[in-house]
Amino acid sequence: MNQYQKGYQNPITNRQRQVLDVIVTHLLDKGYAPTLREIGTSMKINSTNGVSDHLRALERKGWIRVAEMQSRGITLTEKAKTDYYLEPISPLERRALEEVQDLIKEFPYNLTLGTCSDPVDGAEKVIDKLKGILQRAEMEA
Image (tube, rainbow, N blue to C red; front, side, top):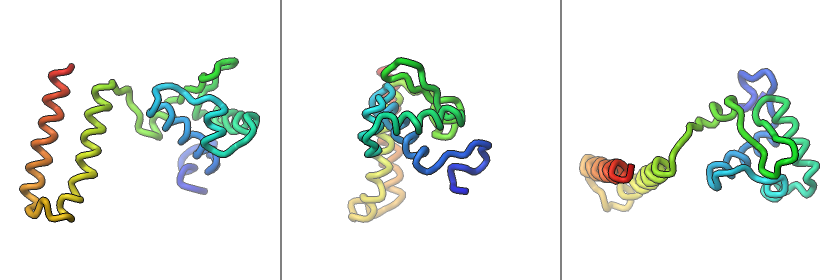
């Protein structure tokens, strides 16, 4: 049993998890579901029928819903949203989150490169930047 199968009655395979990852990533990046061809291209699956097989399995196991006769008709179920820690988020919240993530990535490098020799000073700079992000978010809201 792999890490994605723990606690679920209908476990998914690693390959099905990869397809689900492609769907979630596309939804987060673009704001809409991928087509069968886009999933196939990402997964190096030549046949849309092969992609359909994975989607049917994910739907049967309760991870997604697929609308009939719709090109981008894939939606995530609550199970998938919970598994991926997805909550409804506004574009403003997403931009603030991205700024915070960039700041978190940047902070260890500041310490390593010596541009921030004092960890307390570095933490204060991070807090100041976070305050700026929150102030901008409040002004734009």
